[in-house]
Image (cartoon, rainbow, N blue to C red):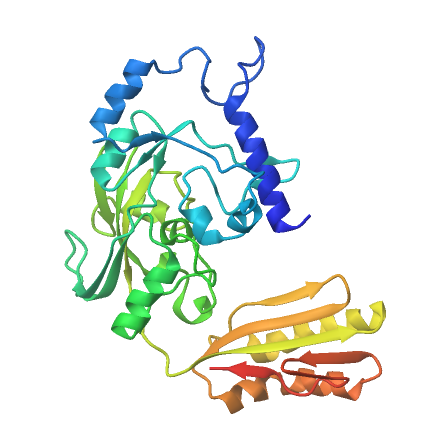
Length: 354
């Protein structure tokens, strides 16, 4: 199933979930929905909206029959700005995304603290970014280091623009720029250059988090270290709602680049040999701090490489791939290479970009 079709199916299921009638007596209930016993009254919602300074609103899902619906659902930036949508709608026959009926478009930790006692929170608007020349965590005696503070709604694209584009430094994150910084860090966060800089969570210096009791806590290695440790990979939202993260930044490598290479085997047996050779090649030439994601093994006997590198010259990067290219060229009857912008029957050279 194509991604946009699955997104559409997930959205349709989510909409149906939001409108479903109360379940029969004895059926399991995951949470209270509109029309069910325990659902807040209109007066309750009005009071809550006032408490959140008018930031409470109903969730409106886009109509799937509109001409541009599929285009919008394929746009991760659009999805990120819709409180009822997620980039992943779930797993077929396992789970699906089901939005709340209302959302608090939080703009501060105080908004989150009010909302966590009552309803769902949407932190997309909390996307402020501050670059620090020298940052010391609260209550810590550690030496100040360059860092970046990001709100819970910030995405990696904007973090990279602020750090690399604005400060000529690097912050370890993911390869997908529309992923949220807070979610990746709380999940550990292995990215393109984690073999050099560690996971995204490894650079976490401090976090502001609203816990289930509605308290706003600033945690780090010196202040509430157990909660701080749990936020570094324990799972997004498991221990509270993170509203701000501060991450250490690092010196920028002298070079960044990428390698694009596609090899197709002409038989299943040749494909098995190619995969085995690549695994060996990775262990000897690519399993080091210079190389990052990604490599895909497709079911049509195609091995597709789109790996990134840092700290290497183009000649050094080409040399790292030469053994695999030589293997394919030596067995030209079994393999064909596809290397944009040209194609040939032989593997040739990988395409490098800097």
